Length: 356
Image (cartoon, rainbow, N blue to C red; front, side, top):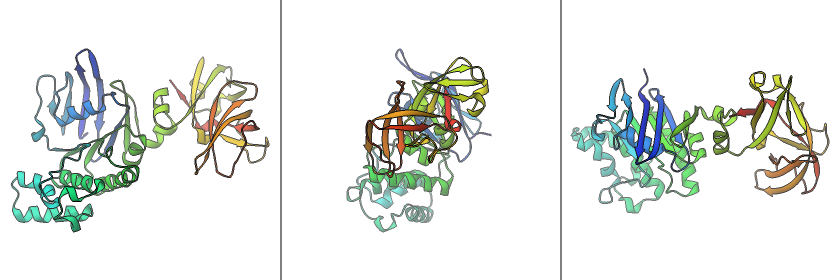
């Protein structure tokens, strides 16, 4: 049985349909990220799960019991869920220890049990040495760990996170991604994480649900989502990509200045008519010689029209010598080419994904 099920939930604000009959099921202990741009409905979905907002249609169920429907909503305090917001929301007049103990004291647990569980939790989040400090004396990352500890110590059935790292600088965000995943691996709490940052989603979640205009575009594990996007929106939102147009002609799919046998492309035999493929920049290879260092994929002569050195790789823009398609290519730092230089570009058919 699924832990949490969203069945065709919908939410309107005036004439705007914020969430459009969304279906999603989470297994016990699963970590799912709701990923999408601002205004796509992900935070509204999270607020409906938390019970702060009721759906206009559909149901939200946990452990087989209906929590929300258009006619009735179980209040947040009776859902056995914890939610972490962007602003941390730690109490400024309480010490770290008192903040973490807050939820346990509300539940009137014995004082010794509270002391034990808070101590264990502070050890896990590496804040035991700061137990008597106040939030104003902590860094942003430390305050976020206090919020995580306070949310997890009550052992909720579901943990909800609403862009919890958006107020941190780049270094702390990266550190906290690993911290959140580490805590999940230790406690195995069913978790829903809202973010617009694809790196956060890729690094933390078991599955990612990509949302667009209130709908789910695709739900998959991070590797599948990146390598096999199903739509243009997903391919473009989850990492950089090139869109290459082709036409199905007999046993081949013909592109701009090259063609590929249908059997060499994932799902190629089933394609018909005009098709579009997502081609990630790192799957393309440049070479000065047609055969030197190349594989067995189709090749086309291209001219470098722009380049940028990004430390870990070169970012090149190239167009076919006798074509117009502009392609972005990532190459190792040692592969240095000049603007205007004519090179060979190789495609890897196995890494080309057909998108709708």
